[in-house]
Amino acid sequence: MRKKIIIIITVVVLCVLVGIFFIMRFGVLGRIYDTIRCYAVQDKTESEKEGPEELKYETFLDKDGNEIVVEMRKITVFDEEGNEVEMWEDTSEGITIYNNIYKGTLDKIEGNKIYFIVDRIVKGENFDGEDAKGHQIIFDINTYDLEDDPHVGYFVCDSLIVHPEDLWSADEYFYSADEMKFLVGKYLRVQDCMAEDSHTGERHKTLVFYLH
Image (cartoon, rainbow, N blue to C red):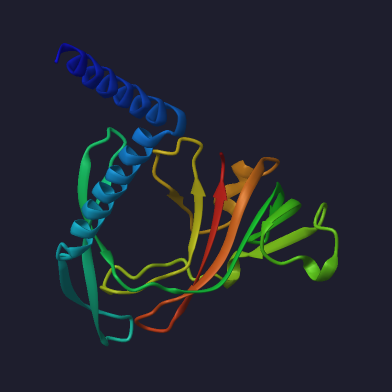
């Protein structure tokens, strides 16, 4: 009887050792953990998707006096101190007409025009096959409508913006090229884009100079 007990104990110990060997050798435990984690993440994601999106509708007047109904959803963002801040954003997306990004030096400003010497094209036109390096782009600010009408509830005007070195600082908006002469000689990243408003069908241009 004692011999049988010893044999049984020996078999049990061997089975345990073999099981441990397979777990360590083939990462079975890790796979089990990964599977459980995947299901947990999936369940969480699905539950978040199933949650009702908080929406509201606001009515504005465009510059011609027409009513524009805008659907807005509540979003949560984080401020520079890491605190959650609730905001509302338009649920519709504008249509991008073009979005060009360059790196280079602001050469000069004359007659409300900005002369920019391209060092590298990050995204956009290739100047009909010409070498980008040293190519000059002229941004004519006279073609921008920079005056926002405070009496109009819904009107998207063109924008001339300088984004500061500090990522948390607010963008600076300008209304003429002459106001930006402090950028002459600086190496910058420039984003030149045009979008079409999904509500009114109007197009607006944005020119942004990044200092960082």
